[in-house]
Length: 105
Image (cartoon, rainbow, N blue to C red; front, side, top):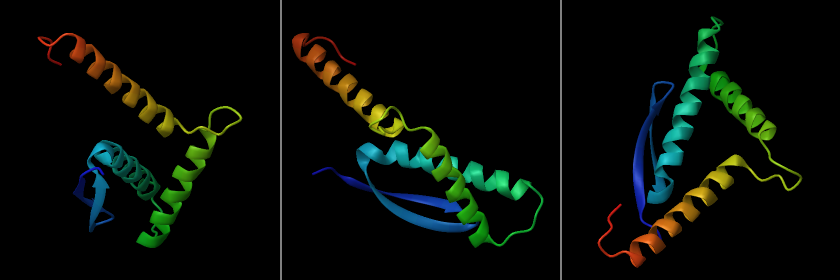
């Protein structure tokens, strides 16, 4: 079982504490940045909207972008591809380091 860390974030002037597995912290931080950017873009449009509407519009934009990024007929998402590449890279590093005891990454 993987370790879980708390990530404190602020969006739309509200603070949230989110638990995430250690190995997914970076991905969650990227998601927070992406959501923040979408929120900023919507707010910069100049129209006055309440925060609930801004959050919903940002979520819809991200969901729409995600659906456009699907790969192949199987619907493999880019995040899955990135995790698999990272996992393969880590496995290769472990094998290489095990074969060369004096080598450090």
